[in-house]
Amino acid sequence: TRLKLHVERHAVSRIGWLRAAVLGANDGIISTTGIIEGFAGAGAHENMVLFAGLTVMVTGGLSLGGAAFAEAAQDRAAALAVTARGAS
Image 1: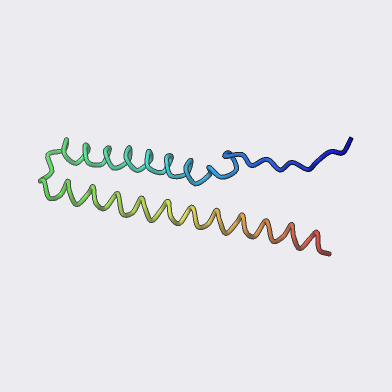
Image 2: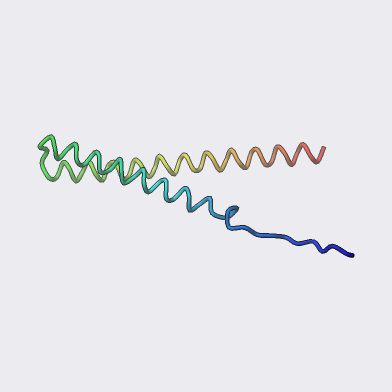
C-alpha cells in the first residue's frame, strides 16, 4: 500500500493573535476600571477621572504594543539563528 502525505492544518497554530487580544483587552479593562474607581472613590473631579482613564488606556496600549513588538522581534531573531545554524 502507498501512503499519501497528509498535511493537517489546525486552528491552534493560527490562534495566537486572538489569545493575545483577549488577554490584552482583559488586562486593559481591569487596570482602567481600577484607576477610574480609585480616582472617583477619592473624590476627584469628573474631568480628572476622565483624564486618568484616558491616560491609562493610552499608556497601557503603548505598553502592550511595545511588548508585542519586542516578542515578535525576539521570535524573528531566534528563527533566523536556527536557520543560519542549519545552513552552515
